[in-house]
Length: 557
Image (cartoon, rainbow, N blue to C red; front, side, top):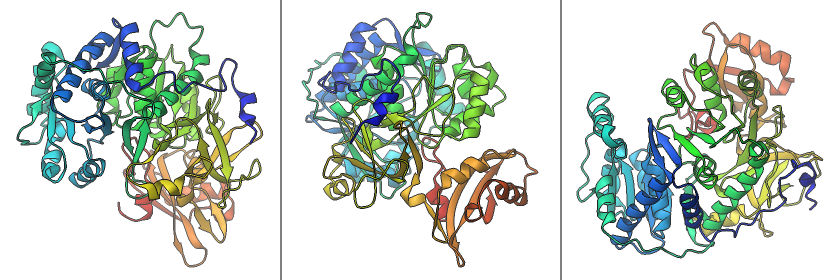
């Protein structure tokens, strides 16, 4: 296979990176701690944590974890939103020689129990706001050690006030009881008097069990090795360098960390890449609170913002959006779901910086492709394969299809997972004999190497024998004034097999279903036109704001 995309790379982007540059993610972190010691690494609710502080605190927590007797390779879960304790916990677990299991703090007890049991987690670090969920299921799991954090733990003098407001004023902490637990700050204090034993880890050791969102069935743990994460951090760094080089006016790159760190996009691009490059991450505990998020970002000269389409859209529709300082904005990365042209256009008009759309999955650590950061407009593609990455578009028999023809996007590179945790049968279904991961997404590649997603195989709608791709329908309807959000799904139809149904959230209360259907008649050929329109006040979304078509299609919401 010819790597036709290399001819389209921006100047200075290498064809390959060295995934063995570090033996472990811990080594990468410790290098950053040494080189950027005095710099702020993360800030949350106005409280900064320096690289030196991150080093010291994570070393203490790592020493405490080791003192519990957990064996090397034990799984330790983290169940928190974006607070300062999160990067401390990640660094501590990895430095102590354990495996991080990221858990969505909004999980129901059923979902939490499943993930803890499936991963075999023996310890968990949980924010007290979600301790009641853990209480409901912990006895059914292998968890022996529970660390409970409070929002104000690392806030210094104002920590007590923060905790009082969270607990008593906003009443955000349901009553809980976890016998034998230890408080986060107490674990740090005990760890300070214990000896941390550095662990020599290898590139092929497991670093993270990253559970897929479950949008394609039962959630599975993608087994990500240290070298997988290292590779993707270095790939992402090489890809972003053309935008970052030659900017002596920027003393430190500032990244908006609004996407939750328990999601792979944020973990790698907002967390590990920020640390690797000596940047500062502004942690947003609740990105659904757009006014609160904008208030937290005021005063910072933002240089990087990774986000999903729904978050960009929500920010643009906020009356306070103009308060943000984008004068130093270098890159706005879009991923997780398709970036709609209407949103991309408004973002560019508002900030002067295009949304650079990329693509990846939990199974690829996550980034596999991205548009060049030198792009000046949204082109509707997911870009080019990253350095050291190959993309092959294949038919159902595993044969590569001609350029421009749709097929399954298959990915090979050092960022591809080792497999699904304890699921050799599921791993076999998604890996080809020649080492490509089958994404389940349908796409095309053009002569310059740009990949365009047509849709997920399972989301495709079949109307009278014609393939209809929801992304296309949604992109069209999103341009209609009066539409805030839209999802397209297939529903049974006695005449055509399936018909297109739209779920729409209004921006204009006066919008009617006839308005939507009439507009679609001018934009879409007959078989692609929606037959049904249902208005909703909101659409179901995953933990990063990706609209869950399957829940709408199955009638579960």
